[in-house]
Image 1: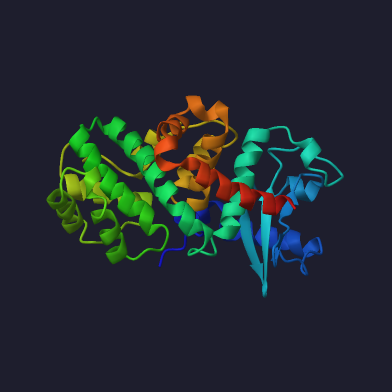
Image 2: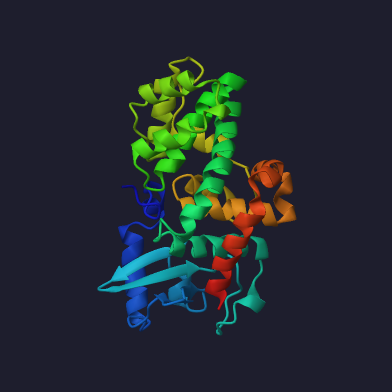
Length: 302
């Protein structure tokens, strides 16, 4: 079962070298008796750059979960959002409120992602639907696909995103076949699954290979991970926006966080992802998604 926290791209940013540096930092700063989640209380470790040691730590585009012995620590890099300070009063020091809001949401959802059957399961429908439209539109526009080809692509992309939640292939098949009103007809959807051999990819590289195998067309022959990444650039704005966009499609908490912010921040309405959220807000009743994530974000601010 694929872990929605430790994706391939996540491991590139929080690799073994980075983990070693964070273990050293946590150990030297006497945090070994610290637990980031005790009951309902959540207290991440914030890196603010207030010491030379913190300034030299590697950049973390998303929260890093570090395990030492039996303890787990959640390390948040706030340096790009706050001014370096000798105190811990982050709220008054924030210099990029929008980007910090995204990071807060990613943090809350990363914590919650441990309970795949809980809140993340309730958010899954919104994330797969909106994320599927976003990724499908980006690839389809880049490859100049027509409407029929876009519907086929959306089925492949939805298959990919559902698999990121650890759902087995049989369940994905049943889930998507129940939604064949979105596609040309049931036989067409069945044909796609046969070509996929009823399996779902787990990386963007595998996704590109699946698309090529299903289409078998010159239009998509050159598609690879780098072209998918290029098609997603400039989808929204803010600190590390392109980096977070790429990460989002292999790390579901990040994808959900971006969609949540796009639904709640007017500044994003002019972005690609913002327009998708706006167009589907009423149909998908996105106020429900907002209410759920608002609750998670409030928990990490207590």
